[in-house]
Amino acid sequence: MRDALRLRDWGVIASLDLQCRQLAAHLSISEDKNAQKNIEDLLQLYSELEHAARNERERVAGELTRLSQSKQVNKAYSAFD
Image (cartoon, rainbow, N blue to C red; front, side, top):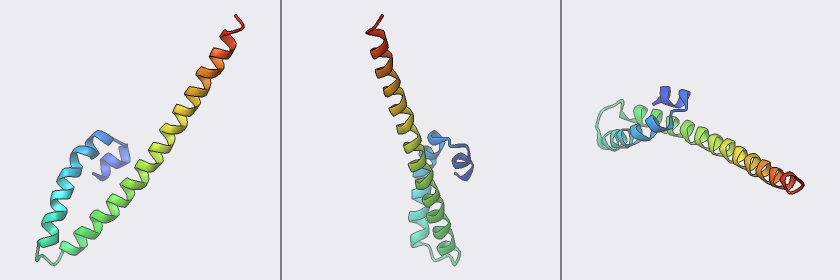
């Protein structure tokens, strides 16, 4: 999932999300001594994913705003043609 995050491959991230949630559920009931560390690692990864997704959403929103403004300017200029 870290590779998918690095590549911003949101489709792969979405497909791996279910597997990660299942792993977290399994780890939460596990008596394995490493389970807590693995859960902490997953929480850190999800925090990174949340941050990256928020940044991506803001980037796309900015692009959509610029596109909308560009269309409005084009309409204004085409009124003079």
